[in-house]
Image (tube, rainbow, N blue to C red; front, side, top):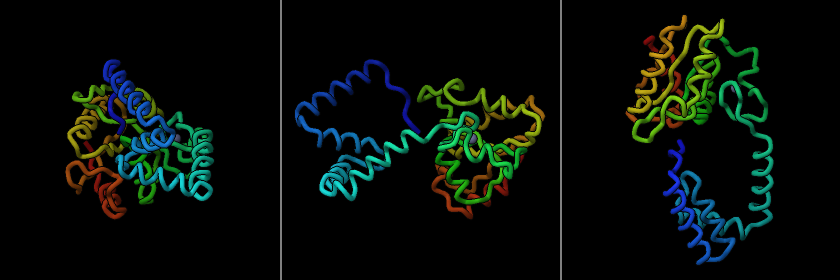
Length: 220
Ligand SMILES: [Zn+2]
């Protein structure tokens, strides 16, 4: 999940720091390294290695990456219904007539949706929240796609809402909040069973565990 938006002061300080750093190095190479280092899983050291490989293998790596990034940036859209990422809008899942329209699975992030899709265990549709409630990080209900979830949950034909947020404090808080907000609607609200370590995210679960967690979901 992305962190909260930085306050003006912090943002300016960071920008000034970056500016000072790039002025010192004064090179596109440094800018490339800094850009890569912002990717998840890449620290400064890996970013330097990646940048070096890209620059050394321009035709084999850098140029195809450039084209692919450009194409993805132009083609990929956020689905206006569920929040999934796809080249179609609405996305392929929302428009697939074979998907069960009575089931709605609520996930924190697109990564969780992808994890469930990889496991082929869920045949309904999704709703991506775009984060979890967190008093600490200042994430409130209005920062997540909760209003659109309540709208969708109230649509005729929807029978069950499966809350598949993680077993972390934020995940549980979010699930309880959603359960409260959904309680007035004629839908069953269930929670993904978590036979997983606290803090485990769906993305890290193997397919068998995911399938078991979905099958063992319990009504709230
Ligand atoms: Zn969609």
